[in-house]
Amino acid sequence: MKHPISYDEWLGHLDGALREADAARVRGHIEGCTECKATWDDLLAATASLRGAAREFLSAHTVEDAALRRGRERVLARIRAPQGSVALESIAGGELTIGRLRRLQRVVAPVCGAHTAFRLIVASAGRTPVRDGAAAWSRFLDQLAELTSAVCGRSTARLVLRIGNSLV
Image (cartoon, rainbow, N blue to C red; front, side, top):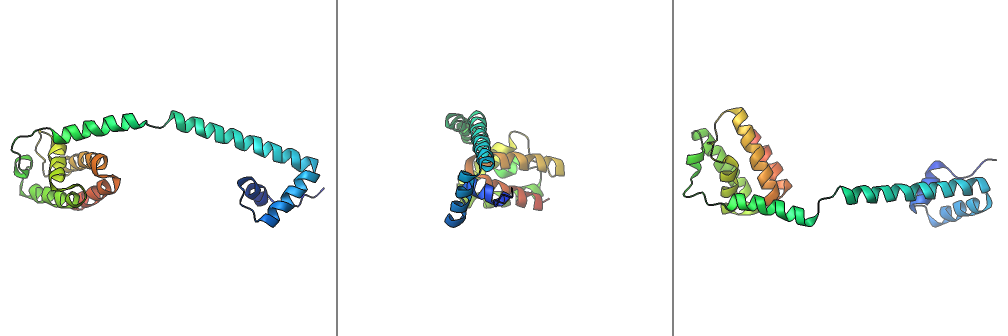
């Protein structure tokens, strides 16, 4: 017997995406055809099983709000830690790097505020001066992007990386 339901119609009906007239035609055929009824029941069972597995996976692989808050608080504590009187010149290894740091500070400041932008740069530099070498600059940018993402968002962190890499 030829069945008047295409593959796309099976999927559309399963997702509830068919026009009402097409859905009524598919339902009518399924009700009158034992072979298609069995296929329909198998599709429903498989879909329910997949959705259940997806829910189980997501519940086991998501970070709880409390864990996110703890992580964010650790980052903020690192940024807020007293550094004494720090200037960009004291963490930079040369004039070229000072200019780069100021440029990155100007990128982050409109989103997070000037003080936070400065603190992000200082926290990223740690106690090691930022050097002019490409490898050292790259490590510093990665650290700055990670902290910026946690405090100011991923979009700002991507902007920091893009502009920072263009300054090499």
